[in-house]
Image 1 (cartoon, helix red, strand yellow):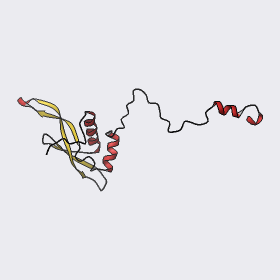
Image 2: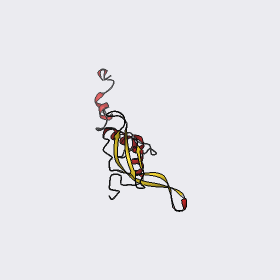
Image 3: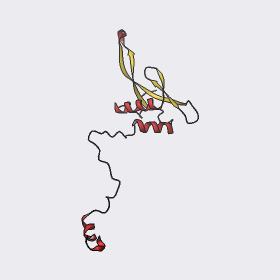
Image 4: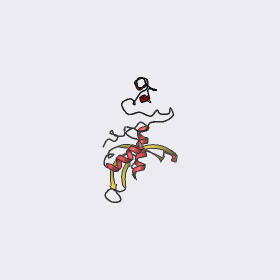
Amino acid sequence: MSLMKEYDLKTAVLHLPTRKKSGGQRKVRNALQEDDTGYFAVSKLEKDLVKKPSMPIGWNITMPMECTGEGGAITRRNVPGQIEDWIDCEGPRGVFKWTVRFRNGQEMQFEVDQLAALINAADRDGLNVTGKLFHD
């Protein structure tokens, strides 16, 4: 159209942006969406635990357990535990299981998804996941 002198291209360029602002354009988030991409997010932990299975050794978690109190009353408590080691169950890079020793003396093994959920829950509850919990 500019060739036919019906439309002035110079005027259009002055009034219309020809490109987007520099940098990546962020999507505007809904007010009710929660951004859970922190260090202890379950999806991130699952990827990291498979790549580096020794990474969480020494980390602390809590797990709800039924404990028998005085008088035989059963209560549900969050018992702290520490990740001690891991085993490779299938093949060189297959399924891993991590052993956790809890403060009440119990030892349990967890797979990737279970351990990631426990680590995430412990972080949400305010436990110092990577710090020192037990005094040996």
